[in-house]
Length: 277
Image 1: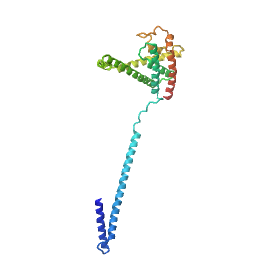
Image 2: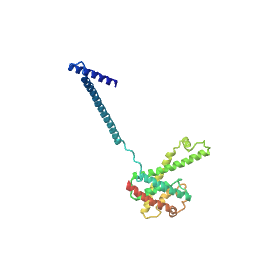
Image 3: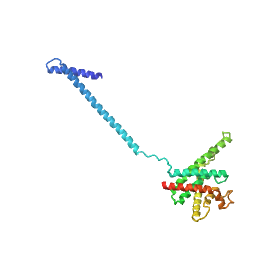
Image 4: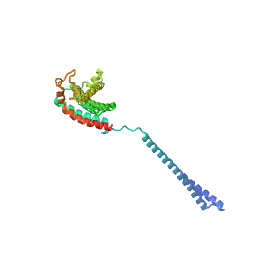
């Protein structure tokens, strides 16, 4: 600011002397004013010009920055959509969980022994896949989706069960002993792998039983759910069960209401899955 004032004063002095020289006077006040105003105006003009140029550059740079951000946002990899109520996996998982819980509750209330502690999810999956097969579905990808839903439910149930067992073992040891996870690690036992392998084998056995069930239905035979129930309850299996002495009709009658109700909801769910797949 001081430099600017000095420049104006010097310009006024020079302008006054130049004006005086031109008018045969020593110093002309009008020339001083014109010199000061001219130089000052020029300086202000240049300042305004460069300010506008700088503002334009800043604005262009900011616009370019926003444009690049918008382009990056547009070209960014889209996030995986969240499951919806129409998603086949969501439908399958919900059905297996809800129908499976009802079946487990029924078995527990009646004190029925079975191969697994909670056969409900396997029962629900069997009815769902049977309903899809009955509807003419041979899509192995869709079957894999229903199995994934089954595995999700089984994993939750297994984690809850293992948590209870683990806490029980620690409580019996006074809270300082190793839990189930520590013992398995010491013994080199991979429980997760064993759990997944056993589930895979059981699904294969149930898949074969489902095909037998469909064959019985196509042939007009009765007790169409017996092949599935045989696997679930280990009937006539190597360990035996309380149902071994029963006829097929007696055996299925015990679970008739469960099979009927779940088959109805399973058929509706199969229709919805095939429609939205």
